[in-house]
Image 1 (tube, rainbow over the protein chains, first blue to last red):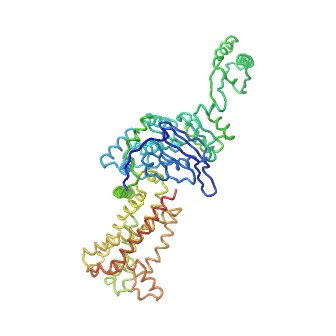
Image 2 (image 1 turned 120 degrees about the horizontal axis):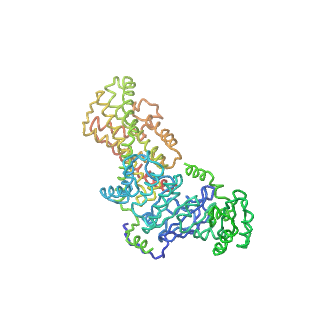
Image 3 (image 1 turned 180 degrees about the vertical axis):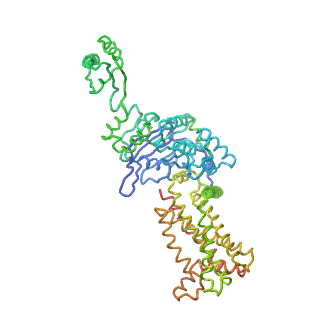
Length: 339
Length: 270
């Protein structure tokens, strides 16, 4: 019964290898053949609108849901056949805070620590240590009902770190958080990876994937529609572009003529506020352009180089806007940001 | 990257939970259940009020009609009410389990390397505190109303433990309903539907021989009748009869059937 054995990392450095994952709920195929490979020590983002199959995928990867077809290996261990071993290697933070509402923060952490095999005193120490690290010490004794959304998420993440698992799943870790708390959460996630952990997170916010993830899988209607680094995904859409805002709107035509002449490309002029957008193929030519503009006596109000946003990426890949499906969610985000 | 490999390599990974771990996990989950009861003491209203009200009500309503007076009825009715009250309390276990399972925290329990049975066994174990409260209060009410069991205190305690153990076994049935049902209120509905005929079509309140023949047949095979008879034998005569054995075997059979299928249903449920 008691098989205690040392793990060997004979499968290279893959934290997650998933092949052909399929999950049906009744007639609805929630996940339709997802393949994912996540390298140990990186942050991997699964990006997609609501209902794309992100949560179902993460639940299958983390042993919470049995796949209808396909296979998943976590550090080389099969999630179905060796689920007990896999559970010793992962921490899961669900979309809805997976902590006990009626108990206090300390009680929650102590119970999870005890379940993970820590002794009574050790559990108390661990709980205090994690609460300190996540800035929750003052609220330690309060019941969670009185916690804010951000505090709850932090406690939730703290609970996933008790056993210092090498792989951490975060299902939409910042949904519903205000911008300041969201930035704190991002910092925490970055810190985790520095200590050697691997993080797999899902998000419907393109900016979040952009900020955090080393690699991204874009998932739509249960299928991975694109995969790669953030830069690869962006360059698959097109080059960077140059954005110029002209101080005096009367100069706009002259400016346009100058830009087109120097960059030798066709430019767009946006109707409002005298904005010129030009494709930038050669970064060196920008110097020439700025000199030419000064010679022509055109004053700039704003000047920037922009890579295509992930929104554009999403639109190009899926043929529909991320916001269309996730309109509710992004409205929520906007509300939060306005506050 | 080397760092990660090492931190995995140093881990001692177990393929299964040992029996000792299973017991420890279950007790930790029971501790969680007790903390929850401590945080929301209002959920103990039913187990405190029901024994008091039912004992008063049924004794004074039926006492004169069935046993001539209230005092003679007490040895008959106290075991009946005891079993009915405690078993009814075990329905709450299933209802609360359903509510609990809908919360996110159960996802975390599932993702932890713990025995699969622990969250269920822990919840059921914690609820024995409710059965104990109901048992003590029922006997206390009986005592206040003048009931002095001939079997003595020792046998009263044994009878109490028997009822608590059997209720714990029966709570696995309601836990099963709790796991497979869609909502908490449907658990309540199904369980009450099962429980009402079982408790009333028994020897709890009236002598079985006053019932029509077909009903006598049911009342005699009703497992609750055996449990009630076992309690009566114990506290009134100090006897461990056949019914005592039947009750214990019945309880063991229920656990043997319902614990595995409940855990299986629990694991299959997403």
